[in-house]
Amino acid sequence: MITIKSILCPIDFSDASKNAYRYACEFAKSMGSKVVLLNVIEPRPIAADMSLNYIPLEEDLAAAAREDFIPLVSEAQAKGVDISADVVIGMPAEVILQQMADMDVSLLIMGSHGKTGLSRLLMGSVAEAVVRKAAIPVLIVKATEKEFISEE
Image 1 (cartoon, helix red, strand yellow):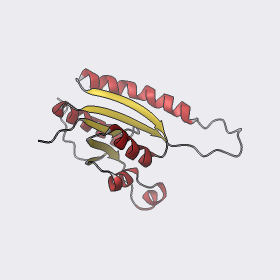
Image 2 (cartoon, rainbow, N blue to C red):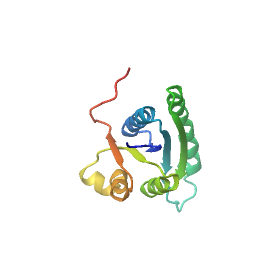
Image 3 (cartoon, rainbow, N blue to C red):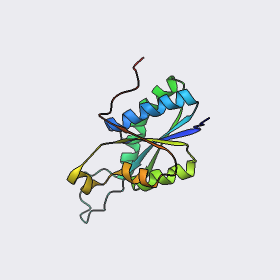
């Protein structure tokens, strides 16, 4: 029998990651697992001109992410899901892989934007980098994927 103790679900608050969150909660409910939501704030390059104060600092972005987690955590807890959320500053793929190892999670469920061509080449693919190096099963959920979770 497969035992899934904990599920890591990286969230960037896009449609794809919100779909992944829903999948993670459904898996957790059916298998009695814990869900750990993770938002990774990518460090901003330091500007030579420090008068550019309109760019939010990583700490401000982290505080906003923590606020954005509140309704997701409340919704999952109301459905009986054991859930927690964390915000980490760093390079997304590296942080996700490190958190997988540190927390000894059983499954990773994450969204993918499905970028192709030049945008994928320039922006990279966090999901692809994680899948390539992950030592655990990974479920990739796309924003436009066929929906298997009913709204009951």
